[in-house]
Amino acid sequence: MSFLPDGGCAIVGGPLQAACGGTLSDGTIVKYISTRGAAPALGFEDVLLTGLARDGGLYLPEKWPELTREEIAGLAGKSYQDVAVRIMKPYVGGEIPDADLAAIITDAYATFRHRVVTPLVQVGPSDWILELFHGPTLAFKDVAMQVLSRLMDRALSRRGRNATIVGATSGDTGGAAIEAFRGRDAIDIFMLFPEGRVSDVQRRQMTTPTEANVHTIAIQGTFDDCQNMVKALFNDLPFRDRLGLAGVNSINWARLMAQIVYYFTSAVALGAPSRTVSYSVPTGNFGDILAGYAAKRMGLPIDRLVIATNVNDILTRMLETGRYESREVAATFSPSMDIQISSNFERLLFELTGRHADRVNSLMRDLTTRGGFALTQGEHGQLKEGFDAERTDEAATLATIRDLEAATGYLADPHTAVAVSAARRVARRPDVPMITLSTAHPAKFPDAIRRAVGHVPPEPETVTRQRTLPERVTVLPNDVAAVAQFVSSRARAGRG
Ligand SMILES: *Cc1c(COP(=O)(O)O)cnc(C)c1O
Image (cartoon, protein in one colour):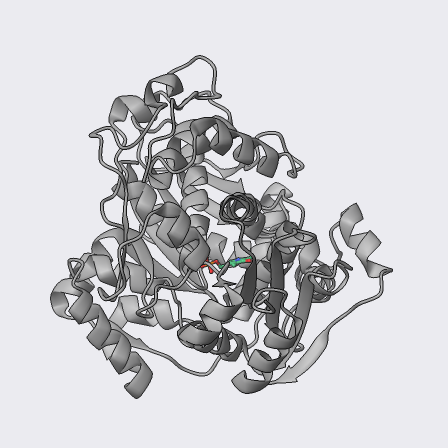
């Protein structure tokens, strides 16, 4: 690894300047290690291009970078982009010059429709909503994906390589990924979604792009089936190497990294580090809330992290019982949370076990062979120290959309409503603001909104435009061999 000549930081003036030019404040370079302990430690760009570790684990920084209280205080009044540079910088470990990182971040968030990128809205004396949906596909996935695609593009072109992205989506990831990667020269993207289980708006976002590098696949199965097939393709090492497979699901560390930023901007806007805040997070694959955990480890004063689930409540049950047991998936109004295995939970497990890779391996083996595992009392206790969890059923989701609109005029999408509902029920300190993450624009889920309040939100112009465009999709059975064959026959990488 080399240090790039000077760190010419693009941010002019202000406390950020002190942080420009290198690595962690104590001079260490962040390396990434796998939760399963048997894959090589990698630098940032390798982790970015790899996604899932070769031992089946997920990458985490060997050491969490920390910000001092003064550094956090110094973020007040900074733009989202400037804060993003400060937060991501230690994670890229000197591999990307500051000026390039700043340019990527500026370009990524120029696609957003709001100048503060992720604005806060007050809905109660101590209750706030953090709107993460102002990106091109109206979902919070854009926040990370727009950065990820630019980072990958840069890394690949520097290496003169092609890559094949294969991903699974329960709805929002697919559109956001396709939007971020469409038309890129060095990357083909294959996106699997469960047929009939995403909304019309979500489907059109994936099926209307016309670029030749975009391949949208409807799988006759559930999201977990899609995700398992993607995992199987990644675990087929010859296939993976031949096609240069790269992951963009929230198992990709770079996505989590980009999501840490809005925890900092929102907490600082409400008075951190002098004030402590809590978050309620609509949770599926546990990526978003893990970014909150990372922010806390970096020194942000966070009191509670509330895991908000719909009736697909593996995480809520685990908080209650200490047992992680997968069950059937039920289709809900919040389809992006309709999953029963939360991949990123493995990263938290690694932390709860004291970074004990052998223990993580044995728990993950139990999950595969017995459909579940049990935490020790110590692990369960640690989990409950920082996290709460609440389940919201379908009726309560609609009732929350209705009440919130009646009380404030604010129209929340069903995913956001699940988290608003959780925030209302959890035990709280009145002096600690509760920030609920809003992960989708209500216009993406008009059917649920109509059922809740009797009218639909005004349709954003991008959605109207897509309605009239022809759709392009390939339907495949829930069969990994068929998917592998399709990807091999279409991908440009590996044709050599
Ligand atoms: C992806 C998604 C979620 C879940 O986020 P995770 O990081 O998978 O926990 C929640 N809401 C919406 C709208 C999403 O797209």
